[in-house]
Length: 253
Image (cartoon, rainbow, N blue to C red; front, side):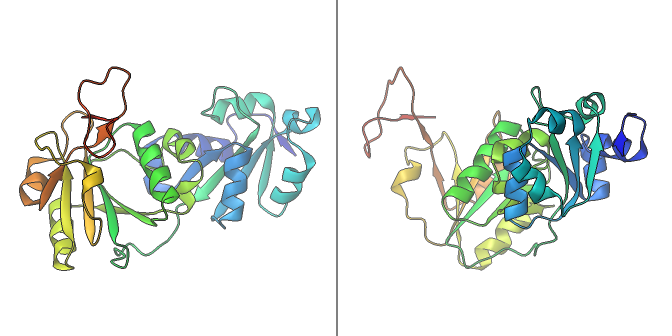
């Protein structure tokens, strides 16, 4: 059966997942696109429902291989009008999945030498890029302050390029208390800051928690005051006024 009404109960519930409060209540989030859904399958994510645009199947836009892969899951077929009503993408590929937030251990893994901590990061693109970078260097967790943006926002999920399925997301209700606990496990706390000449490439990352701050205000005062060290993050720019000693190419920000 192909759903043709946007007022269908299943469709209404999926559409609600665009809002954080419904993602929090339901414990579910949305991923879109063939690549991300294949990543979800490969990483054994808990897939609740896959929504398929029937028009895209008939036109051949969704190939038979991916249709075979998703056939074992709970698939809901909808017409193009309904799919466009729930998609968050400008040029959708006709596949959307509802994923259960993974029920992983929310305890911090102190076996990793480096722990990344996000202090009120807001921009979805920044959040996604950070998760993708954490994943690319082989780290498996990130600690996020309560006031940071929602990592399960559809824009963040897309920009993680699959890292959302591999990185354990630990939300801290009180970041200062969390960092104090980390210190008890013999970790150094490093805060990113403009108020230093040290740069991020010149420190040893052994038993270190590095705190990345809000885009506008940086790391909060309370966290800076308890940090063992402050560092700048060099950024490449076209008009470079100052260079870092380590590579002679970077500007400090």
